[in-house]
Length: 77
Image (cartoon, rainbow, N blue to C red; front, top):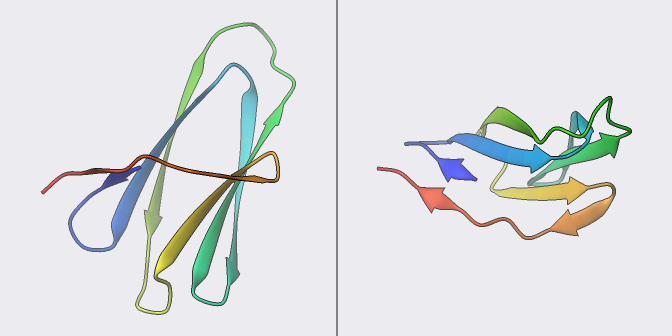
């Protein structure tokens, strides 16, 4: 994840498959759900998502194919 100033976040995800993304909130956590589906070819794809957080949410959890994933974060001031 790349953190911009304030509560705007950019997430970059690479996959050999097509990816369908969805969001869900659970309490103060925002779940970013990424589901990989069958690819049309064997090319690596890069997906960039932006997420704006409000004062009611303080945690981002990323799930890939239903499994929670650790995400390295780069902070850019």
